[in-house]
Image (tube, rainbow, N blue to C red; front, side, top):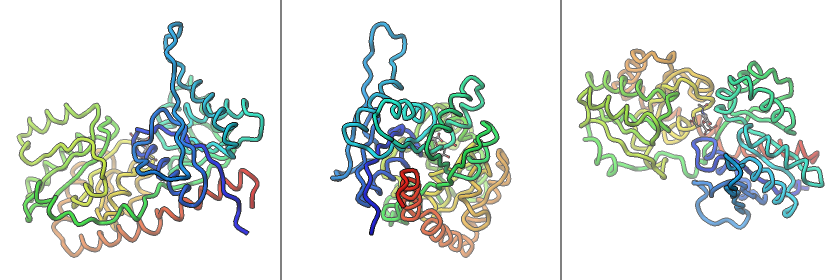
Length: 378
Ligand code: GMT
């Protein structure tokens, strides 16, 4: 007989980058598989999309009491988690990010009167940034050790978590995934025409423009490539480095070749316009955007930081160089774009790799098996 369907609470940063996307997509896929999903977040997840009968949303709201200097969001979240768990008889809470979410889940567990289980997924930023801060280390370690299962999105992140925090407990590897029904090469010939002439190639970068994304390198690579072949650059997303980048583009006198598209909802459509994705990050525990590109048949050229080498098969679905080596990244871009046979091999390898290794069905089942394991259900 089939194991019973579960009631799962999911907490993530619903409006933030890759972790929010993965948490939301996972919730949707689990709901499709018959589980009941309760998002417990401060706002409605941005990729939640259309109505589904198995998906519920519980909003965490924080009262700004006069006596508090800072609104106590973490405590409000922990109380909400406990309240929803009790009311809905949740089997488990699956939280994305150790800080603060796994700590809140740990508190919620103490508050509810039954064996609520917790699963924590590490996405990188919480470990690599916060674990450098000595004062936070014990708290992160507690959050991890008190979770009934811990997963991380790359081998590299598992290694880093172990070495920074001296964690002995097992950590499951659960790669990020994309829904192959959404991420596939779209026919964007008419859209493409708005940005590039038929003989021009399109380079693209998508990020939240944080310093770790090294958008400066993106511009340098583009500038180098532009000296050899007709190319356009599409920059998608917004963030702290944006105005600096706008100035750099002006300073180099390449404004007419660079488009700032801002935040975009329909990433599959936008990414399908690209010939190459540039991801020269300083840190990247996985690099979800490179997987989104891969699934749409777009190779990535970037750095070998963090988990990127586990995602991009170097020499098959893209090319990786040491962080900051823009000369090598520029050369790789030029070589790939000037060889149509090689490019078409890369494109096919991208689609194939995304559909097999990072397929939504496989990864969703992996998470499901982790849930059943912590609940003691065979
Ligand atoms: O990279 C960011 O700025 C956003 C951050 C997040 O929390 O969403 O991304 C992290 O999680 C993603 C989903 O697992 C990964 O694809 C990103 O590589 C990871 N970012 C970093 O490690 C810097």
